[in-house]
Amino acid sequence: MTLEQVRKEPSPYGIDFFIYGVSMCGIIGYVGQKNAPDVLLQGMRKLEYRGYDSAGMAVVGGRALSVMKDVGKVDEIHSRHDFLSLRANAGIAHTRWATHGGVTQANAHPHVSSDGAIAVVHNGIVENFRELRAFLQSQGFRFYSETDTETIPKLIEHGIRQGLGFVQATEDALRRIEGRYAVVAMNKDGTVIAARNGSPLVVGVGDGEYFAASDIPAFMDYTKRVVYLHDNDFVVVGRNGLIMNNLKTGPVERPIDTIEWDAQRAEKGDFQHYMLKEISEQAETLAKAVKQDEGTMKRLVDDIQNAKHVVLVAAGTAYHACISGRYVISRIAKKHVASVRASEFENILHMIDRDTLVLAVSQSGETADTLEAVKMAKTSGARVVSIVNVAGSTLHRESAYALLTNAGPEIGVASTKAYTAQLGVLTLLAYALQGNTEEGRRTLEVTRNQAYNLTAASMRANIRTLADVLKGKEHIFTLGRQLEYGTAKEAALKIKEVSYIHVEALQAGELKHGTIALIEKGTPCIAFFSEANRRETLSNAQEVRARGAYVIGVGAETDPVFDFFIKVPEVGLCNPILQIIPMQILAYQLAVLRGKDPDRPRNLAKSVTVK
Ligand code: M6R
Image (cartoon, rainbow, N blue to C red; front, top):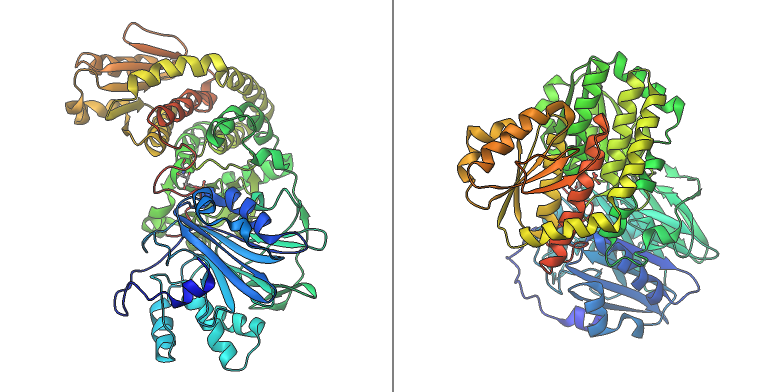
């Protein structure tokens, strides 16, 4: 679709019909000597894990701005429209994950001003879009999409009509926006502006070229030098290079960091999917996770010991790491540790005060629910420390300090290696609290070696036999006690999100209080057990077996109760790290056998940056 088509196309929605068009997406901008569409297309492919409903690109060549956008995955759109038919040295692009507004060509980004001179890509929410839209309509602007984003190029255009230049008008527009955003705006003279408030955005600094993107893999083939933008930062890339301002404080200088990941770590290599590659990397990533700075670990041990209450907070998979983490920490530190889902944090706010230590756990460091919880905790006077994978992320910066999980880029939407890295750090912390960091390191080293064996081809072949049995099932139950309950929850989430089979996780003892009514002949039940709870969990396994269940055991020694057994060595407090690995493989294989794309499960996005 050309710009002309975008502008002239009548709105299919009419004036009064408007759906709240929130999006959660990947954005990228480029200015330099290379052909911008090449760079942007590569970047869109790398960012597609953040959203894959629709995608688009706007580029400037010969002082004309062209837009191409459509619904579908990046390569599907490319095969229909050929992004590379455009030629330019500056451009912006977007991959979209819609939450409210429909998946339509009109809602896809970039959005443009009425005169076609300005294009904008956006990740976040313009919370006051209704007021802004009504104001702009009163000024004669027409809207062609359901999105909140479309207000941004039109606000900028309004400023220009009032006599402002592009930069000043964009600054003005962003000051009028309420809500979280990462925005990249481009004028037809090739000036590109990158700005953030609450949503992720990093700038890449190359040799005479600049990138702005939601995540580093979008441009890491070209440069490893990055500037992590802070909230309200406003960066202009034009003829004079890079000019950096903060909308609240004025001109700023931000350090240029050199990232340590190499581009290969964000590539699939010989693997068919990122998910399988990331599962297979876990022996290596665990080794990196436990290489924590002694001083920072000691500081956290002191903070935990000095706090009256310790609360672990996270979402999704990271929360499951907290379920197991709270057991290991409270057992060893002899201190009650609570864990709460980030989206529920507000409901325990009355318990949070200056004597509370909040330990936030996240892969991306950009999950809106977790960031919101951290904000509330800080407002209540609590100290916030994080365990986070992405250095420089919002969570990293909002925390007093952080332990980095060092798992490298995780591209598969289903979190795998980041989860075991989080467990590794939490377990090491537990040993450190006991004053036994060295013992912790040794146990984790044994665990890491076993993780290597569990990701081997022989394990994949064994699990494939099980996947064949389970692939046609509608329901699966997972059972575990104590530490293994975290594993049961995470195994259920993994299988659900990539294979779309319904899986329910239960604390094994709870089964007989209701859910056992669902067990019938052939119902699969996966029981995780350790030496510490073997007897009790096996007796629960016996209960479901007696009702005809197909019982799968995951633990160190088999038992006649099991129809299928997955042997995982006993490593005590590290059991959750090992027992989840065959389940990640099972989830992956179920997805593939059922014809689903495990890297891009339906309705999901990698980082949930909206509430
Ligand atoms: O980036 P975070 O760790 O904060 O993300 C939290 C969840 O959104 C995430 O773990 C999600 O549950 C994964 N898709 C699960 O595989």
